[in-house]
Image (cartoon, rainbow, N blue to C red; front, side, top):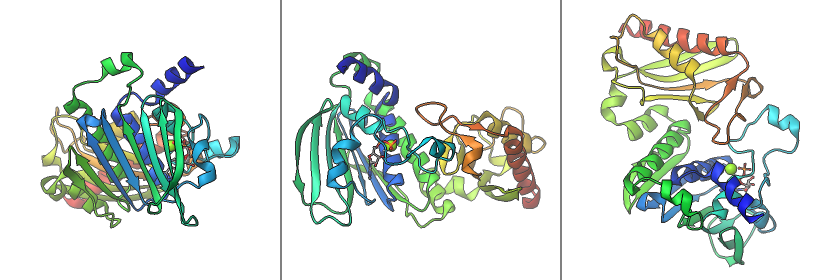
Length: 323
Ligand code: ADP
Ligand code: MG
C-alpha cells in the first residue's frame, strides 16, 4: 500500500513547481483574493503557500489529505463541466506522501483554526490553532523518502525558475487575485490583484513588454478572446512568451499557437515568433481538461472553432492597430 502511494504521488508531484501549481490552484479554487508563495532552495527544502480563501472546516481537514477526496465534484456529470482548477482530489495526498507537511487553516465560521502536521503522509499531530481565515501550507523536504525522485531534481536555481514560471502563469491567469512570490526571502513578483490584465502583465513581464502590446477583444458565436499580443516588430526568437489561458487555466495548445502565428503571417519576419497573453472563454462542456494529471493539455470539442477564434481575433486586432 505504501509503495503504491508513493508511485501515485510521483505522477502528480514531479518537482517543486508541480506542488506549487497544485497548491496555488487550491488557493484559487478556495476563492482567495491574495496568495503568497515563498520558497527556499528552489522549493526543495521549503515552500509555503498562504491564501485568504474559504479555509477547510476542522471536520474536513483529515479528509482533504485522503487520495481521491475532493469537495469539488460530486458525480460524473460534474466531470463534463469542470468549473474549478482541481477536481481529481490527488494533490494534497500526493504532496503529503513525499514530504513533511504542516497546514494551518480556518473557515469564516470557526473561532479557532486547525493545525495538522503529516510526515510522509502519516498524521503526526492535529490541534487547535489561532490563525487568520484561509489556509497556509508549508511543505518541507520534498521527496525526502523517495531518493530516486530526489536524484532527478535539477539544481536549486533550475527548480526555483520552474516555480517562478508556475507562479507567473497563475498571476496572469487571474488578474483579480493578488500574487506575491518570495524566493530565498527576496520578493520576486507582486501583482496588485486589481483585475486588470494589463497591470498583471506589467508586473510579470515588465514595462518594456507591456508597452509593446496590441489589445485583443473578439467574440464569435458565444466564444470570447481577450488579452494582448505583441506588436509585429516586437516578435521574439522563441515561443516562451506565448501564454494561452482557457477558462482561466494556463494551457499548452498547438491549435492556439498555430492560429496565433497564422494571424501574423504577413506582418512578421520568418524565424520570429509573436508573444501573447490571451484568455479564451468557452462553455465548460466544450473543453476536456481531464486529459493528463498536470491539466495543462486540453481537448476542445471543436478545434476548428478555437482556431478561427484565435486566428480572426488576432488578425483583426493587428489590422485595427495599423501595425
Ligand atoms: P482537488 O483540488 O482536486 O479537490 P486536492 O487534493 O488538491 O484535491 O485538495 C483536496 C481538498 O482539500 C479540496 O477539494 C478542498 O476541499 C480542500 N482544500 C485544499 N486546499 C485548500 C485551500 N487552500 N483552501 C480551502 N480548501 C482547500
Ligand atoms: Mg487541488
